[in-house]
Image (cartoon, rainbow, N blue to C red; front, top):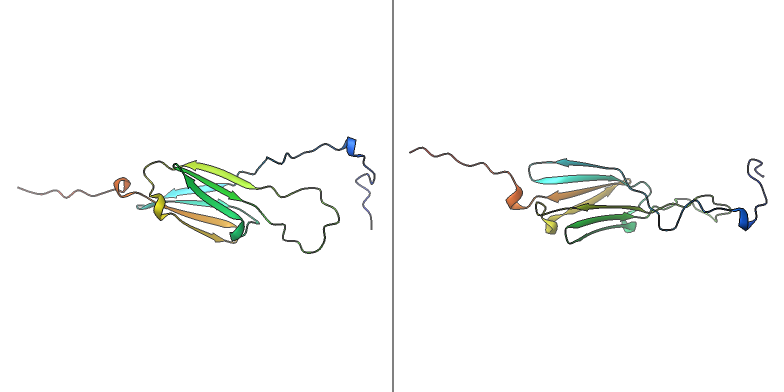
Length: 129
């Protein structure tokens, strides 16, 4: 079997690199707020648990994930490479970094970012005299 839509002979000098190795994809996210936390939902298709890196450094939340091809067998010809996902968020003082939880379900990562006690809404009791 052969394909006729692409030239079969290409010299290395005529090839142009369309992706630099340092490029990455910015995963789409949804962020919503509950009374006690912020919830971040990131779409990371093709990424498995062992290929996700979630870090906090100086109030900077970094998400990084490398998708897997999912194909078995020996690659005979490839025209694209899967690119790493990368995104950063500044947290600030309203988030308690010690209590952050992350889950991954079918390529969707959910981060629960609990609010610090001082950032939670608080009802103030009114007393009568």
